Length: 134
Image (cartoon, rainbow, N blue to C red; front, side):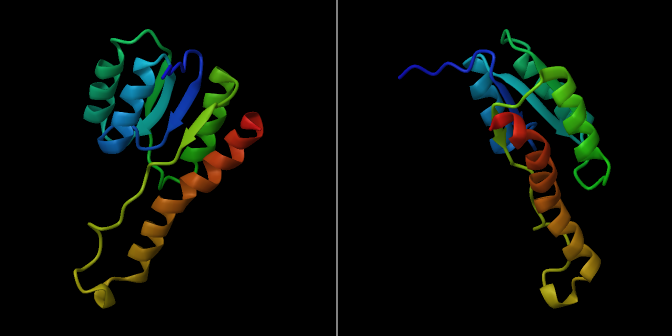
């Protein structure tokens, strides 16, 4: 099988650890340009280091999906630099570490944050990237 992602722009939300980082490394190995973000500077540095051995373009910046302005601002910055996204992977998510073990004691604000973390990026990044993908 021939995997060739040369000159393809791959956006991976949550691409600096776990499954997201594994995807980033695999796409980079086959020539894909990698775009991602993280809240954690150490993860950003580690990801840049891992991807530096490949001859690709990358954009890995600090950002938080829960920051209401971040997804739109980052999406517009990406489109300005890369013009389009070819592959869109929504990988940010979570919520299992928030709240109480007894879910009935967990405050509504926690559930709202879990919802935002798991959905805001999907909605915003899809809105900005899908037109160029179509």
